[in-house]
Image (cartoon, rainbow, N blue to C red; front, side, top):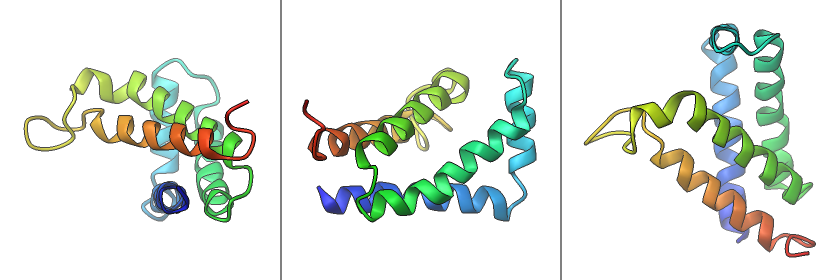
Length: 120
């Protein structure tokens, strides 16, 4: 399970760092505000910083259950706001669908359950 934890934690770091590097935090915040979510830019920065800081903590095996549950919830919100209406497939038979997010949610769930105290 450590390999899965390192892989998914790294994916979240890459996601957050890339959002910062391409100047995508403000547009992400604007999208959130367009969906009726207040303080979208501040929330976008919060999400991004949790990815950038929480990902390495997950990789290091720290706060595994809580970070896994947070990231799964974040991905569920992404499905609700964006990916569900695009369908299942990310590429091929569709575009921007939810299959990748669902796979990550399952992986985060498995890591959370396998963490100490995760089965209580």
